Structures are given as C-alpha cells and as structure tokens.
Image 1 (cartoon, one colour):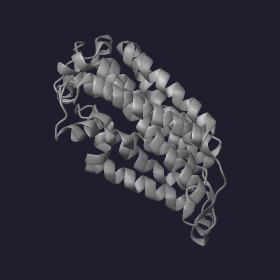
Image 2 (spheres, rainbow, N blue to C red; image 1 turned 30 degrees about the vertical axis):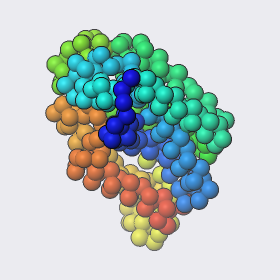
Image 3 (cartoon, one colour; image 1 turned 45 degrees about the vertical axis):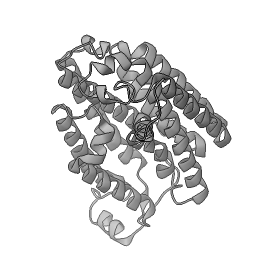
Image 4 (spheres, helix red, strand yellow; image 1 turned 30 degrees about the horizontal axis):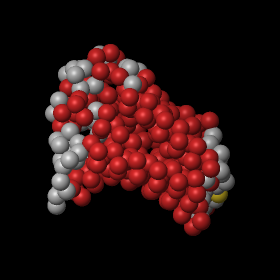
Amino acid sequence: MANFSADTPIQLIKLARPVHWVKNLGIFAALVFSGGLMDPIQFKTVFWAFLAFSLLASGIYIINDIFDVERDRAHPRKKNRPIASGKIPVWMAAVVAATLLSTALVWAEAISHFFFILLSIYVVMQIAYSVALKHIHVVDILIIAAGFVIRVYSGAFIIEAHLSVWFLLCVISVALFLAAGKRRAEYGSLGGAGETRKSLAGYSRELLNSYVTMFGNAAWMSWALFTFYESPRVVTNLWIFLAELSNTASINKLLMITIPVTIFGIMRYESLIFAERSEAPEKLLLTDKGLIISVFIWVFLVVWILYGGVATYSAAI
C-alpha cells in the first residue's frame, strides 16, 4: 500500500482529468438554442448538471485507467498517467472513482429523473467500453460519439427542450467527426500498433482518413441545413432593408452567417488530425489559436443572433 505524499493531491487531480470537462459543455447546447440562456433558473439547473456530469466523467476516466494500466505503461504519452506511473495505487483510484460516480448519480437524481437515467446509461456504456467494446474497431468510434450525443441530450431533458431533426443530425455528425479524428491521430502517433489499443489493428490509415473526411463533410453540411431551416426571423431595420433590396438576403436565414466560421473550424481541426495532433481534442480546443478564435467567433455570432435583439426566436431546436 502506497503512502500518501505531498504530491498525492496533485496526482488525484490529474487522475480526474478536469481538462476533459470542456467536452461536457455540450450540455449547454439545448439551453442556448432553445432561447433559455438568459433564464437564471434554467441556467442554474444546467450548470449543476454540467458539474454532476463532469464528476461522473472523471469517475469513468479513472475506471478506464484502472482497466488499461498495463497498456498505458506501453504508451509513449499515457505511461505518465498517475496509475500507470505508480504514483496513485489502484486501490486509491478505485475508491475515488466509486465516490465520484455515486455522488454524481445521487446529484443527477436530485436534478431530474430522466437525467439520472441518461447518466446511468452512460456509466453502463462506458464500463462496457472499458472492458470490451473499445477493442472492437468501428464500435469504439460509435461509443465515443454516443457519449457526445448523450451530453447534448442530457441538457435537453433537463429543461425539456425539443431537439429538431436537423440539430440532432448536426450533433451526431460532429460527434462522429471528433471520435474518428481521435482514432486517426492515435493511429498516426502509434503507427497503427495494436499493443496499446487493440482496435487500431482493425483500421488502416486510408479507412480512418475516409471516416474523418466523411464525417467532417456531414458536420458542416448538417449545420448548414440547421441554419437554413431553423434560423430565427430578424427584426432589426438593417436586415429587413437588405432583404427588401434582394430576395437573396432572406430575413430568416441569419444563422447562415456562421457557416463560413464552421467550415474554417472543421478545416483547421482536420489539418490537426492529419498532423497527428488530435488524440486529445479537448486540449486542442484550449491550446490551438486557430480553433480558439473560430470557436469564439462562432459562439459570439450565435449568441448575438439569438439574444442580441436582431431576431425573434422561439424554441426551434
């Protein structure tokens, strides 16, 4: 049994991987696009749900590290993780994981019963992934993508928001794009070796390239369709005047302004994928200047259009 040291708290924080919590921001998607971002009650509810999901996700990461400890020790980057490096003993990691999972599930039930059900499904799915499903190529990508979809749907269930078909298609496409990109970068950095991840042996570089390209195209096209069919009607005189000058400047397609930014973001992310830099997408979103700028502009435009007084908007998602 390892002794506690001054470094133990730091290693426990690393074990929980709080940097990965950025992926859980997907919970806010339904709140933003349903028009409830400025509602203090709804915002507070979704924020607490975000924290609960983050604790749950951290518990799942720890369980995955416990199952993967031997493979992680053979990985050039993952060998430095707290469990693989021996800085945190397995027994301590198991106690922390159980505490995080139980706390998150109790918290989820207090927020919403449907939220609790979704989180329970997520736990079962992720444990199955850690034990067996991540070793099956194609299935592993689908499971990763399903995790992103559950995040978005969790936020929708909490505030009882309706998700349109176009928005759902966009979420699924982006989730598959991120999951395929993660596997493509990992394949490139490990040379397709199956020692650290068995599923990689079932892929080829060309196959993963085609997945990334296919889902990248689907992501921006589904977003374009969403903006075309679900954009709010603008109410400011400037846009109405432009629409009167030309039918091309339709007054209910304002969200389509975000399409070029979306395409740039996908192109930038694909360039990082093929440079073998997207094995940890959550870190890229916090470190790559091109992605940070494109995400900031995209969020600014969406919030400005939906909440800046230029449009009238009802829950359209």
